[in-house]
Length: 292
Image (tube, rainbow, N blue to C red):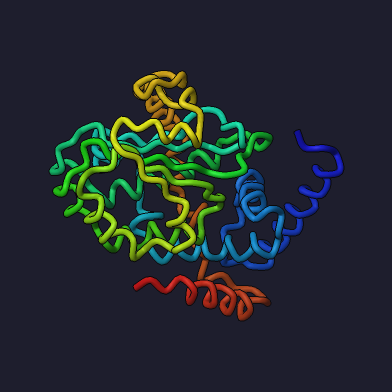
């Protein structure tokens, strides 16, 4: 629980961040207090850091609108992806107050796998979670878990490098989370070939967070409780299919929020006395996002 004096400090910082956004009219002006709190939380209350993170986040979204703006959780492409893969935040927090996020294939036919759609759905699930989470139970960090069971070399050939580059840039530099660990389960014999593709996009300090686990290994449970996993993995979190249904329903409920451009789009035509400063700030942010 947050104590009174801490609550006031958070409120003051949120107000400072809100006033800063109002002085930058190119940014969306309707960012929720809950989402702003997440930005502050992920930067440990550093308002200046949160401001830079916001600029990077929205700058990158607008630079790659095909992934972040042109999206619909109910369109055919997204629904097909959700038939092929599970992207499910697991309930509860670890003893260290971290959130587990589970990703796996459920249909192993590589011809049905759309890499870019997977990236788009990944961020829709994240945006949906950030819009609906309990502000009193924000995690200290995030632990993604990727189960590679069923992943083949044919899946690897479906990797869209442009989408991979955007994904890696965003999650490492613009996502309002603190990555604590990354776990890869059921690593295949061709893991070296996978790393040849993805490692050039992973920062050294992030790569050090990755733990690779062989099939049927017990080593993951040295890092997080088995009980927090779905029943299919010997846990007590319920069936993965039931957990997924909850998130698919939430995506449906948050569809308008996810698709409303006013929530995500930079207003480049906005006039104001500080327009020159805004242009300079955003231009500087976008220069740091050079990916192409």
